[in-house]
Image (tube, rainbow, N blue to C red; front, top):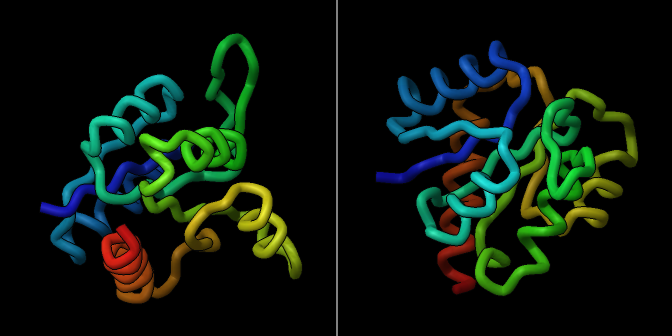
Length: 136
């Protein structure tokens, strides 16, 4: 079963994503905004992909507030979790943001909120997982 870890601080967004992925995509979902837990899930390969909200308001790591970009950088710079595909999710999608966020974080893709086309959302996630499996 393909599992998506949703890192999202808004419970409504989490529920919307979880519903689309399980009902329409037939995928398993986990959710967390706890940075230690996110790292552990990635290290133990308990998920096939991470959907990472860029602006996390509650996430703290080693006493510092961290956002989705920082968590993605941490995961991508660690050899044990670098292979984990990560798609950034953000509502702040101005022209140029996408490239900036992707370059900054090393993420594998980018989705803007709100998600309008549910099938395209699922397809992008599945394609990103497939690409990462080809490369490893």
